[in-house]
Amino acid sequence: MLQIDDLKVTLGGRDILHGISLQVRPGEVVAICGPNGAGKSTLLRAALGEVPAQGRVTLNGQDLRQGKPQALARLRAVLPQDTQAAFPFTVAEIVAMGQDAGDFAPEPGLVRRALAEVGLDHLADASIQTLSGGERQRAHLARALAQVWQPVGPQGARWLFLDEPVASLDLGHQLFVMRLMRRYADAGGGVVAVMHDLNLTAMFADRIAFVIGGRIAACGPPDAVLDPGLLERAYGCRIAMNTAPASGPWFVPQAAQAG
Amino acid sequence: MVALSPDLTGLRTPALRRFLTPGLVALLVLASLWSLSSGAAGLGPGQLLAALTGDGLSARDEVVLYQIRLPRLAMGIAVGAALAVSGALLQGLFRNPLADPGIVGVGAGAGLGAVLAIVLGGLLPAGVLAVTGSHLVPLAAAFGGWVTTLLLYRIATAGGQTRVTTLLLAGIALAALAGAATGVLVYLADDRQLRDLTFWGMGSLAGATWGKLAAALPLIALVLLMMPFLARALNTLALGEAQAAHMGIDVQRMKRRAILSAAAATGAAVAVSGGIGFVGIVVPHLLRQADGPDHRRLLPRAALLGAALLVLADLLSRSIVAPAELPIGIITALLGAPVFLWILLSQPSAARG
Image 1 (cartoon, chains in turn green, cyan):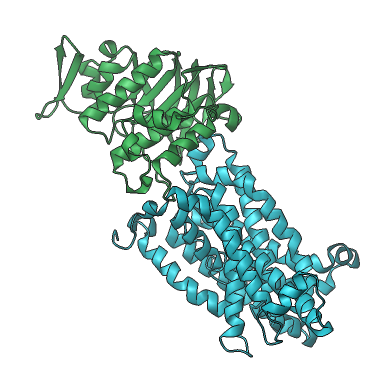
Image 2: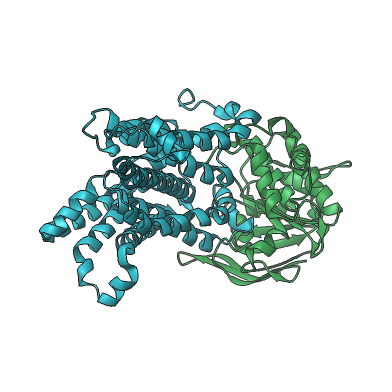
């Protein structure tokens, strides 16, 4: 269980998050959505202890912000928006770093399997510095996966925290990665992801925490949260909501100005 | 820039990986034997072999071997290993292949510490001097290097990222400051201290003695012992401080250890050899090209290659213009400065800005 209680972030005298509370259960994919500058990434990073904040965040009962790094590394893995490696490690070496950080060091072949999960096994021996943005993002996702390979461990559920995991991916790989998140949660793990793409989110997330101006404006299942009124208020443009029987609601911004 | 930074991961074949470490050991052994058997005194490979197999040496040859060449060789090995490892540590810490103790001012800071100890060490309470003994100069150099590295880290690293420009410019500024302070101290020094300073500042292994080596060795040994505890942490640090923390590394503790180790290695090397440039940048770079940046392999191999390289550079420095000697710093700079430029030009443009 991820429990966020009254998380507040103030940067340079400006309140970025005004006391956010959120619970996520294992088995759920929860997406954090909202317009640019709403505080989505800040919420994720504050919950993980990367940003100074007030409030309490626990993961399976452990303090997520100030817990022991080694114990937390076995409980959750993190994918940031973009990661630049300072040295030309191979993709396989990067993924092995994740494996070493979790409890999975004795599992042979795990690096290859994690790479296959993100469709990068053919680039295992390439330098991470020569990959495209989308390939790099998937390589680091494989690293995160290798760190928390089994969704349930001795300390309960394991967790993936992903900051825009599909932002630089093509359509096919977006679906590929969303399915991977879904499978991880279905197997008992927890997934918290900052997402921009409402259509993909509606297709795969169990719940959406919609953030506007540093507050959660709505939180619940996609079809309850994503109503055209909220979206117009959030994005400042008209958005048409259509429904397709197979994939749920989908959204198209309208060229005409809102109002 | 693509043309200047070819993707050399193709070099990283299993055969190279397997033979690199034994190859480096062999290189160091051969370089050492060559170094021991060459010099003005005419003690050649034949006599060396005789000494090794237990046949007697003449009294004169014994002095040459045990009091001149062996300490000099041992000093070359220790200093080369220390410089190369401290370069690799600084590069890992600053996440940048251009960080070299000589270039980013750590060497100058260590030099200031050494000069402080030489000139003002006599003012210390007798008790302190009794405890530190001959270790005073290396310890002071390590302390100077430590303060400089801390300052450099504060200045050049913000939010877990280091900008190369800031790193290099801050290094220049800190080196200038340390140089100015060193200049003042030299001005204050009396004749005997000036003589010590001159010997110290020559950047040479010519003054090697067993005593000097013993003074610096504990610091170097400390760093070599720290390497296994830093290697994995430095690997994850390459992905940034936040990622290293999420991967289970106590980042603050690791940074303290890395800074302390790099400063101790630089300090030890500077204290006994007066600052020899570019070893710290050339050695890790060559090794990364050959078998990748994994610090678990890079750090121990840097010690081996650094030692071998410095032994060979020392050999060159005393054979090119024999019977005179070139300062060894000239040799390492001739080798190292082009490599530095090569790395600089092959940096991704974003990292250079």
